[in-house]
Each structure stands twice: as structure tokens, then as C-alpha cells.
Length: 243
Image (cartoon, rainbow, N blue to C red; front, side):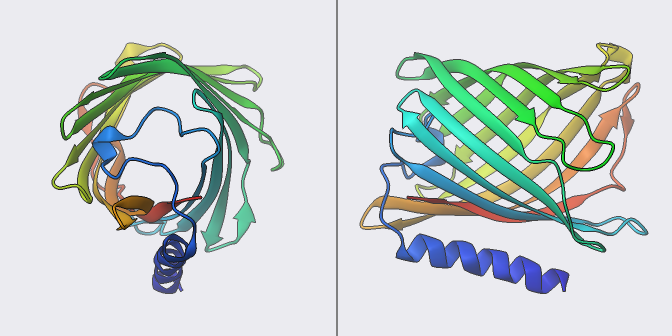
């Protein structure tokens, strides 16, 4: 079942990318802007497989982003549990506004809010300042964000993401994701994830149609006084199609 789901997702992304109209999106990951070009729609589809017994499970996600303006992008994401039980988790809406842009540096404002649909869930609000730096085949994403869950009592976290993309060639990029999450601003209880993967860009006549990627991640790689955790691992496949 899980192998079939992964194959269906990859096949679906490839089919979408081979039949849609070509969008104005840079081929190289290193050249991708913080927000899409006005009028471009991006559709995301992915699946995560937990590789830890006995909590083996499969999750999937569906998302869409639309660029209202060159500097303003709206998004909607729907996470789902697939196995061992199918369930729809809390969707989220997002806004990204690019406030600064030069040839090599971009910065903006990102707001993401979850919509509670599951029993016991609450609104989660994430407000951040994303920063993207480009240089040749290299792109680095960082910034700072505050995550605030409207629970009782409220829960808050400070997030500092670090994402690196390096184009091995025009179509293939290596990606490394890490950063720091600090629950309740208690720095001795930090959480540092670690993920690495490859993204292949599907092109036609030199224009971008979509991306297909695979990655391996450790969501709790380091935490609580440099304790390393590698027995909880996720394998992810997915991609993005542009319209």
C-alpha cells in the first residue's frame, strides 16, 4: 500500500508536469525567487513515510500557491494521515509578501495560520521574516519566525530555519535543511532537525514545468543538551507543478 502510494504520487507529478502549460519559473533552484511571478500557480503533492517501528505510518499533503502579484503570494495546504488510518488534519492558509529585493538578496513577511478541524486542535499562528540569498549555483534561506498556538495555556516557539540549495547542474539540486526550534524560548530545550535530499527540475524547451524530489530527514536530530536522535527517520517523496 505504501509503495503504491509513493509510486502514484511520483507518477501524478510527472503526468501533471508533462501536460500543463509552461510557467515563467527559473529552471535552477538557486535562481528561484521568494515569491512566484504574478499569475503563476504551483500545486504541491507529497508523502512522508516514518521509518521507525512500531510507529510506522504514512502521511500525505496537498498544497496550492498563487501569486496575486510578483511580491504577493497566497497559499493553502492540506495535510492528511494515510496509513494506518486515513484522516484529514488541520489545513493552513498562508501569505508571503516580499518587501525587499536585489540581485542576490530578498526578504519579506510570511504569515501561516492553521484552521482547526480535528477535535482538540487549536489555531496555530506562525509569523516570520524569511530571507533568501542567491549566489551562482547556491541559495540559502533563513530568517526568524514566531509560532504561537492558541491553546490553554498558549504555547510559543522561536524558529530559525536554515535551508541550503546547491545546483549540481541546471536540472538537479542538492538540498540540506536544518535550523533551530526553541519551545517557550527555553534555549536549553532546543530542537534541531536535519534533512537532505535531491530535487530534479522537469523542463521542456528550456522552460520549467515542475519539480520532483526525494529526501531523508531526522525531525529531532539534536535536542536537549546536544542529544542526537537518529532512530526517528522520515523518507519523503513529492514535487511541485507550475501552471
